[in-house]
Image (cartoon, rainbow, N blue to C red; front, side, top):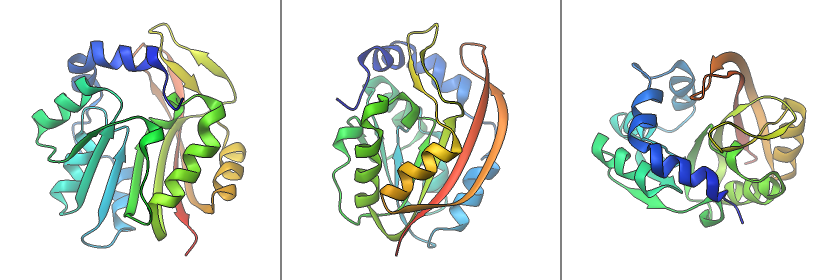
Length: 199
């Protein structure tokens, strides 16, 4: 199974409050950086779209976006923002072949059970066009934890993710690190990865 039921239940329950809390006031630099790597008019999958702020940003740039999430309540919040194309499914539903110029996975893959990550990255690679781009935002570390809100988190080091991505035919092109505070108030180390499928 490529989803954690307790995590999905949290997002279904807290969708409205969570979406409002985490939506940035301006488009983040990492999304602007990622967008410069895409063709002017691209097909983009917002994988684990949450409240949909990134989907709206890509739409406003003229891209064709599919916003995919395992929580129907989160997708409802995305539609309120004006996201046009939503899809309810978990990571096992990634079932495209060479469809996307870019896949944006902002702090979503960390909720997938660790044992499913190699298969999920393989599906992502299949869904990308040759030379397509992948963004992964993720909590950095090596532990698997369930936070006080019952959400599953599988943290990854850069070295571990680099190996998993390489096995899927994807190469890391840029990495940045920063610190933030989670929705539950905990300090977190964040890692932002821009990677490219082999052409």
